[in-house]
Image (cartoon, rainbow, N blue to C red; front, side, top):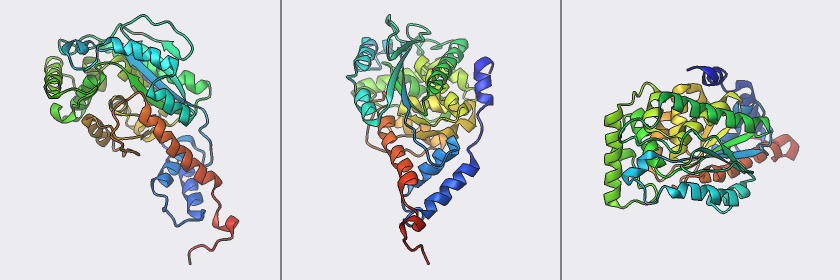
Length: 352
């Protein structure tokens, strides 16, 4: 590692034990049996550990939605044409996609970042252009990116996350768009976990059985051609990843370094986080898994990081949709620890 990547990783610390203990003590004084709110209490303690604050409001939040195309789409691994990536970016900017609806409900801003869309996009309100190429190269025929491109993409993600945090963001969520990106993400998960390709590969945009078999074969060919080194996450990312996946890994790392909680979405975000955690294991403590995707590789990625998802709704859209749903749970846990009365305040007898 070198440059910004090395500097950011060096600043990732550990959770604040004192704040976590203070959160536990307050939770135990609230008018309820200890631990009776289950994972809501765990979330409150975790948020205190990340931010160092027991009572807080995560009122400025950004969904960093990174978009890029993938050369492997030429192998017929998606039910949709590559042109959909740019078309969906336009839909995001108009506010008409699922992520826009759910982000509005959660009080989150959607920031779209062009990391490598195969179309000319003009920077505008809600869109940052950080294009590193017009899509990656076809990983079934050779490396998707050079190592330098992969590092630059990670650092772009760090820069975008740092920009949002400097402007007041207190919570980051990961979103994605890119035809072919479930193929790249499944390849990353297979390479880093050693899981068999058929076990981590799903139907993505809705493939039929024949297309799913082709997708599995394409991933197996990409791994055989490129031989990514599982001990070197940047090598894996460069050979079978994507610009937006690398960028999201950078978002995770920068959020961890700045002690800003990061809410992960589905498979693509999970693959990106797995890369980030392999680069710096301490980063794992600063992320929460919003949900478990219907894409099978996501479960393998979460298990490899020791993360338990908050929700399991059979979703597989991406975009950051699951992350926005989880924000409501974070709001609930913060309201509980801030607004609920203690036994003393309520005049309620505590346990004998």
